[in-house]
Length: 150
Image (cartoon, rainbow, N blue to C red; front, side, top):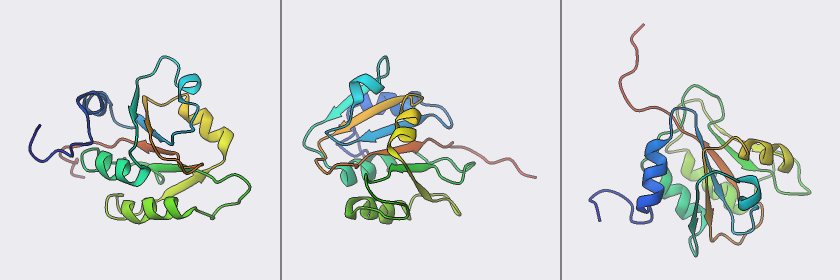
């Protein structure tokens, strides 16, 4: 155990998050997600029994979100709906993200198959125990450090 680190973040997940570079992406997936086929060759971490909101809270407690893109977080659009529809879970995650998103940034909804295309470019996938369908998110890692003065 370490002080100040959410105990949900396993050594394996901490290592992956530390290895990721600026704008690398981390997929947070529900229990039904096709992680093994879409994530072939990528690190896949399992958090069975852990819900999505709790996972997002733990990951964003340590991982900064990208400031250089307008949408550092993407969610999978719920099947059979059109944007801006969000499920109750997606709305809960969006509410949490208001406290961690960079100024002016927002979460975007992405249709299922374009979302899958983005997953194939991700650094790693975290499969949660979330049972609500369509509860999948992609987070772009930001940077930590001094900003350049103009």
